[in-house]
Image 1 (cartoon, rainbow, N blue to C red):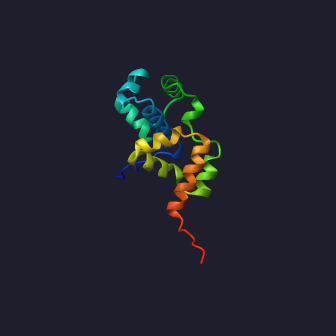
Image 2: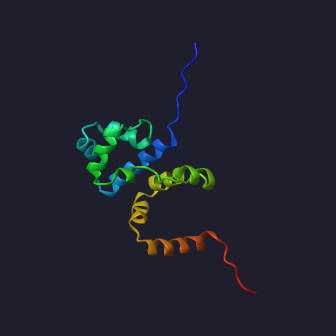
Image 3: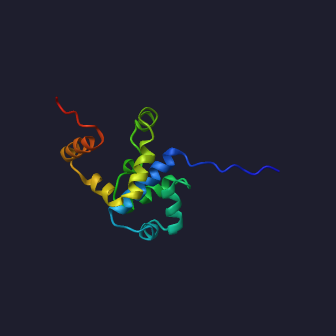
Length: 134
């Protein structure tokens, strides 16, 4: 008798779950508060956020209403698959950054476009060796 293989969550389910978590935390809500708002258990919200359970269209709608965001905010951008294959695993990296440094990730999400460019230039200076003229 063979044991059934556990299927890994689809990347889009992981991305949607990460967006639910990010938006929930940005509002200062616990998993319990979101669960109450959408009439589920907090355990189910945990599964959604981990991507281990897919979210139905009706629950996505309920989540968007509860978090006062658009349905589009819950999904990765349209060019996500292209960016994922060409640019590496940025979704997983963003999930790791968000999990390890939630306050940093929330602050980054609130930056204005001009501030993002300044921060990006500064960050590049930290990781790119400085070239000194001789």
